[in-house]
Picture (cartoon, one colour):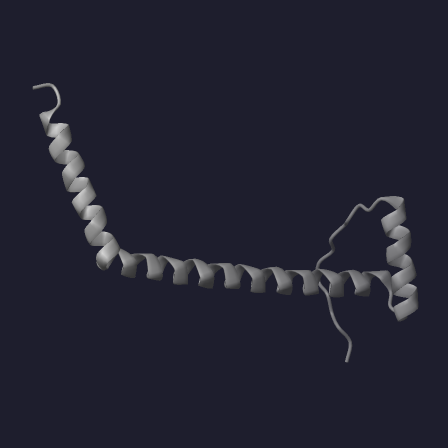
Length: 93
């Protein structure tokens, strides 16, 4: 089966990186365009996984913070805010 690609992407590399890229493609027995497509696809998959992990962690932390705000921590914050507002109301009298 042949992999078909329909779009072209031009990438500028410094001479040293280009030479390393060509050398690796040769070692793997791949055309540079195929190695580039594989490298970009692999990078995108890794970054997409990283984003999913960060989103899951952020959601989890947010849910834990919300639970804390409903519990004793939230009650303490409410008392602090009420005390501040009572003190603020007395200023200027």
